Image (cartoon, rainbow, N blue to C red; front, side):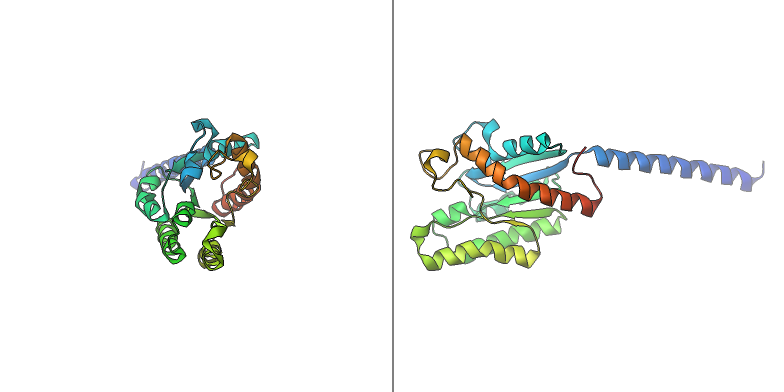
Length: 225
């Protein structure tokens, strides 16, 4: 056998092996669930309800019921502000999420922190996630109305400003359909009870599924098995 023929057969064998390995890797990637991390406060953490009743857990269950191959990770810390969220970004990224649902700001408003400060903090988090090549969905909050119209306008508007700046999906108000309904909240009037969590998830689900489809199309991965 000539050296040229021998090398040619060797090269062909290597190329065939590479094709097999690449196809296997692609198939494995298709079978890995899309991983969503919720970076938030007590609303994400599930304050006052059982761990299995927290929003991330119930959202994952709802998505899987629809046939979505998705894992939702709970990165909520009760009492956390937008400033505290900055310190947790790297820790959360250790779980290698594909998507981050950013739900912070409620405690800022409860403490009447300057909305400009909250906006800067959330901007910092979003920028860090962008640098990490992670998709971001922003989950909004509304300020207590007793803080006055100027504060309310500045706080409520900061989420859309950030969503527009970074061109990321925005769900305007996580407590839509639940806020100020005593039957859906715990005794503090702030945190959803288990029934309230189900309402939050029901209202949130269309936003999540729509953006899951957009994400899957952008990276050529199915959002369903």
